[in-house]
Image (cartoon, rainbow, N blue to C red; front, side, top):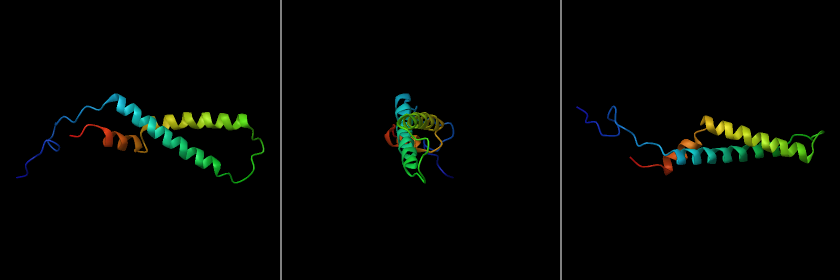
Amino acid sequence: MIALTPKTAPGAASPKPDPQLRKAAEAFEAVMLRQMMASMRKAKLGEDIMGSSATDNFREMADARVADSMASLRQFGIADLVEKQLGPKS
């Protein structure tokens, strides 16, 4: 017979996640996604006909908003890894 440890026991309460750590982890993921999107924008394949500094600023703001939305979905796993690394150990 296999003895169940507290980690694998059914119904065992896992440590309660810290809401501030969760928010900080999502913010870190958003920063990483913004950097990734900025790098992709720099890899231009041609000259931008309608380009201007205003357009660049708008794109940066739009990218930041998209990165925040993507981070809140937690699909990339960066926030989960940060939370696991910095969270309470069970």
